[in-house]
Length: 431
Image (cartoon, rainbow, N blue to C red):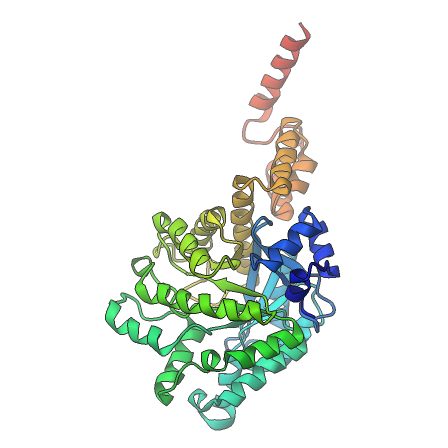
């Protein structure tokens, strides 16, 4: 019995109990959210080491970090180093998006090393293997694709990113709508190229029942990727994007009826004034499924600072109802991220998630900020640093810029306004 089936039958599983404690909510709240499709638990049957993570309505906003081998010189060791960096920075989940080299070893090593739930995009590996064995990724067969999907499931992947809603009808709509940018989804564009080359329908759509059988067998969450996501702010809310959501809405119903949990990944570039509308449309068309947003980036001009642009969009999206943020690094659009950029990307996304959680009244988030406020009032630097989203950075700045480690920071020194005013108010109160 899957987690979703258990929830529908009013059975509280161990995974539900675990995430309820982590989130500070009741077990019944978790069960009910899973039963109606608004919450998913990322934890497959085969990922023994993983600590389950819940994503969805009424819970804290989660952050995911993507890594993977993209260049022939990339190594498993280097990508694992990035994974450890992301985890230490506070990422809730990891996604392996490797497209080259020993992808199996990369995935299996990560799954047996970390306790975070892990996602993957099997199409990447299926096409990479077709190119290596047959000379072209276009020679990938449907059997090749499903063999790789099940291989990932057997290994213990917790959520599978798949472009199930990218039908030929959706693709044909692109010709008519006048996009400014071509399709920017790496997996989506490659899948579409395969479909056009063979003049066939999307195999993930046509063989959706087969996919559900695999997801059910290993109790894996399906993460519907959006091939039509906008690659620039001018293309936000374009018709093919909406059409893909409509298709996904139907697939979500089928998945839930089959006992399979589902979430949906969302757009990349969205101007601020369209973020709330985008989230509401997705939630409506996709039957309230948890929304996994890539950023979104609120401007196309922040090259080298896209982690900041994405954090702005992520905060607004999460406040509007998104549940899960995929980090963006400063290297987005110009190169592959370094370990340091992975760290910064996770921290930026966590700031966005936390800011949204405060605004939504999440009790744990509000309490966290309250404790920081008290520490600042008391000039308790050790506690302030410990409560920081990035304590190591806070400690480094404090150490570098505080000459005598006094109770004041170096900005005001002995003229610290908080210290002076606190003394004054204390005297007035006593008098």
